[in-house]
Length: 265
Length: 266
Figure 1: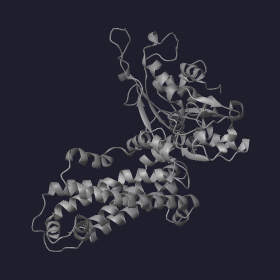
Figure 2 (figure 1 turned 90 degrees about the vertical axis):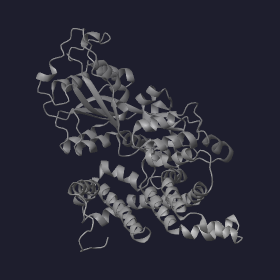
Figure 3 (figure 1 turned 60 degrees about the vertical axis):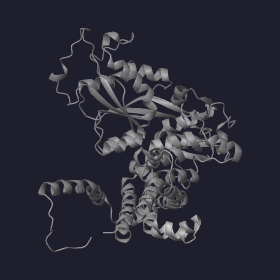
Figure 4 (figure 1 turned 180 degrees about the vertical axis):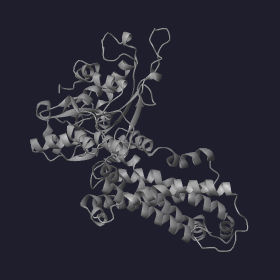
């Protein structure tokens, strides 16, 4: 499922002395300074933070100096499972940047020609075994995922968090007694947080974002996914370049990802 | 439709014909888009693959169970709505129609908060009877029943109102009790509408996606119905997605054509 979240407004305050007449004389696309970012649903909190930051004029960006972005940029975030995003792009969805939760899925977008910019790995993420508030299923290790009496959730095999979960479970030699394979990691995390599921394998970052208790971290977190980013166009416009730069080392996006618990690339 | 060669006695204005044709094109075009993308040679293989057959089985179990539940619950509701003086009739009607107009995902979320194991009613179902609906086939049946029920209730209620209660009053005068009247007088008069309502409800249940994925989850062999399989296939194997979509479209189209010729007056 796709959630379109216009996470920032293009308000430029009159009187802040900032030039706002340049949008019309740049050869950008018709949508002006709006940058459409299709991102894996596990990046939703990060994108919200980056969007808030880039929507402000540089001089009022909470002390984080980011010389790469000269003007306010509005990010329109399209969040879904990575493979759903790749399918939407392939069917002609209009977007500027694609961010996937693994490199395999990004490779599919490169191979079918819907992404032409250079692919960069921006971060890594590990899975955790998150349990419902109060741990009603008394889950204390990954072995418990084989217990049929529990309600266990995993991501669908086709999305990155699901294929990583399959690899983690195979490596631990566990046949999971899964009760659902959710289409993206956020819907899985939400159902655990709502106590409709006893536990499931979600990203460390989503568990941290929702404040979920995690168990057996060492055995679950040995494998990681690499998050990939690429511009849809070969020659991206200035606002798009600004958003891409934010996710490079030293950029605001990279800083927010580190704070959220993502690992270095 | 019957082919008619004699001139229309009451021709429509050209502008209306044009706009009408545009509307029809909007409705029919997607089907042709699908046909154009259909891999005909691979179709038999795609539709008999293990994952498709498994989803088909789940879809049949879920949709037939939901249709039975619709008939069992919807017919009484339609009868009560048509024949008795209920308080707040507009509110009741709105409740009946609601699943038709709200996004199914909203319906699924609402079902989760009502019947989930921490839900309003679901917590008691769980602690008293050990019944858990989310992530089960029974949950998928509940979701499908939720979205299909309005089709049956509105169809049957309209037929009951149209038929009027004269025959039932005559039956009562002749000494038939309310139950005998319902079975021997009311039911036979609305049988065509009941059939239409059941077929429409079934078609809606087969096509259900949003409430199912939200409330019942997605597990092969348990809750992964054909529409869910289609959505997954679209991301990994678009040809399979087209094949399943075509099958669903053909079945629904067939039901509607059959309904038109069998049950509705021309």
